[in-house]
Length: 409
Length: 166
Image (cartoon, rainbow over all chains, first blue to last red):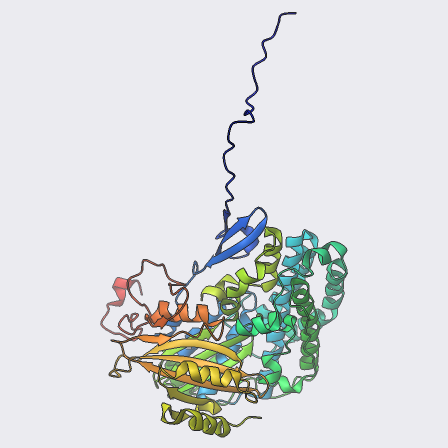
């Protein structure tokens, strides 16, 4: 065997000076098109190993200048802009906007239309929360639950189709009422949904609520105290998870919410698990409201007697001169609204959705500002995920339910 | 239930002629103040023992190009959960001197709302920790929500429809 010359290992002799270790933070770009952000917005995170040291958000990727566009549009044409804000619960945006304009015009909507609106808004809230909670499951590794409950969202979308003809961007409701009465099919489908939804929701609960893995991943993840939440302008389920029972439906009832019996769930710690649980319970409460509303649906007209604002039925337009004139004027946007200044808020899927409308007496708003809950509470995100790991930060974002459309408007 | 009258009187007593133009459009107490007094007023309402107007609901701007020396208005919406009481406070600013103190020291949530208002109107919030554009690109050299940038008027009649495929 030949001698093998052993090369000296590159070991520094004890006398050589070691280079000094430099600690550096890693910059991680989370987004803008990362699947875990569930929308287009970017987070530039500074990481120390796996811990997040600080973060900064960049938003505005789908900014569409709705507030500017609205300044040239007739009031009824703005409903389609509101669809595209929180697209997980468009009917709430649409009907909230219609109620704002009705407040400006002083139009009183009949009881039946108000109840139909409540049904649609609560169904929308169920779909909104259902998506948020099941996606939270996906982010913790439970994919099946998400696909399973999608089927129920589909059923709600079928109800939307019956009521307004569209599924996602609904453009639901008209100034002064609804565009059509609830059809027998719609009523049947709502009853079917009330019957078939609870078992599905129970199964989702069974999958997640007391699941050891899910609890370990979510409890004490991304907590926020109620003081900080108020300072940051949190509303909706995220504020209620922190422990304050503020709900616009109860505090400033609109569209006959005072007629219904429901409770507001609150959490304690404001962490991801509490946000999940609050949304989960709210779905039960929403279902309760839908049930009460459909069973006590009042008889009567489904639109207000306000011919200058409410688009007349087509049958009238063809036969009646006056209806034809109003039809033309409304469609061309020739109807002037009174001058005034209105702030109207509804409880959106994510919190207080406010419409600040200034009219100078023209056909379009002089200024319209949307108070978008996602936009306001998302700024707390770096504070909430500071010191946590990346995987926890994903869950925090998911449970906040930031909707990119609402964030950017 | 807190009445508009009660709060208006308390504000008049505390701030005298620095608060003016009291209105109640659709039942919501609206008043104006000067930019020197806006932060003291917000602080007074927030820290008041009984009113507890602790929540900044909304902050935005409006542009009135025809109002000489009052071209811009910053609007604050506040809410007291204890009394279910809302109040709207306005501050008028001149275009030449478009500065207003920031409310980020009082409400953490004012940060992005002020950035959005700056982005839209170019209103400068003095003391803001990070006053950059938020929704539009940073290279943008104008403020799009100002009225001097109108969108096309949907009612104009001087266009030939055939050229536009209509």
